Image: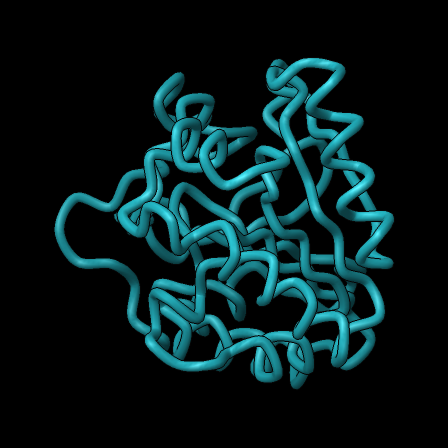
Length: 204
């Protein structure tokens, strides 16, 4: 089985699924089979059960870990029940741990219901991939399965998360060019959330 937990530049990350409704042109999983210290990121066959995720948490030992990020090679909200249950379990192991979710923001479409409240309350930080400053460009670069619907759904999800989580971020990757980065930052500023420009070369 692939690594459920891995490290990248000193950070601790969770990889609970390879599923994703997007096939982003810049996605790191199209560039390499592993990230950071992981030995294997692809699940060939079944993905980890909640009990297997809990066992990985117990084996890792999170009592002295300050922060953890749910990210991996897929979209964590594709397995929303496992995601939320794992976050709750981590807090029983270490009530002081800070948890971040890296997401494409399409959870409501994926799960066919509103999910921002559950997610916003479960995580200390939610980082949402804005990717581009308009819907057409977003569909082109993400190659998602919800063309025309994904971009507004992602923005609505970000706004809703902001009602329940104090640290919501919209992010882009630096490959989209300075003009689009500036436009994307304005969207985040107008929404009242943080803006992050991620490095493609560093993979984060």
